[in-house]
Length: 218
Ligand SMILES: Nc1ncnc2c1ncn2[C@@H]1O[C@H](COP(=O)(O)OP(=O)(O)OP(=O)(O)O)[C@@H](O)[C@H]1O
Ligand SMILES: [Mg+2]
Image (cartoon, rainbow, N blue to C red):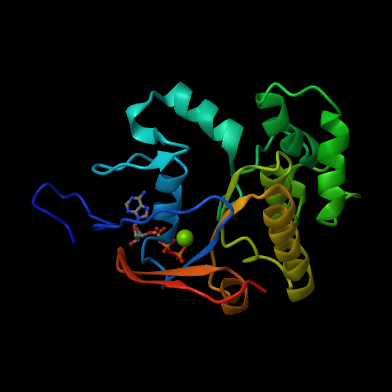
């Protein structure tokens, strides 16, 4: 809805919390506000109203640098449009979050091993523009996984992948959840991915239409 000032309200009265270790799928029609919500949850976008608390800290009460540091320490994010750094190779893109954390131990090896896990061991020195869409998506996933983040936000993480590759990536995400205790918040149009999550939040026109806890996780 556009108000008199010409601004558009995308999300309305959305309120929920995610428990550490939880797996949450956000589903809903195209344009319903899923990516907008994910960007806010991760502190990448600023809301005109409202708050997001991560690890007990109000994300929007802190400055940009502090928010970026908190994100770097705890958050992995896979953008719907990948957002790889164009002048860095696949390997350098995946090393980046480790370097930003100030880590020095085996940074190159860990990044390489994560790229191997997503089937890109032979694309280490390729630049994003020379990779296919699905390959870029896998670099973006490796970049988000490499720090074993406390919370992983992924926007359509299998959107550009074939069934088998998508299945491998999903398995990797749930392994991260199981082994590193990473909380997963996934936006997906894929019913089978949503069905593997412990909880499904349905967004309709910027509102929470349903919030369902599923039975035992598969
Ligand atoms: N930067 C922007 N400026 C203005 N409107 C925007 C902007 N980004 C998104 N929108 C609008 O906000 C609404 C929600 O967009 P959003 O990207 O969150 O949808 P989505 O649920 O992720 O859709 P999809 O499944 O297609 O990715 C859409 O109507 C979109 O046109
Ligand atoms: Mg989207």
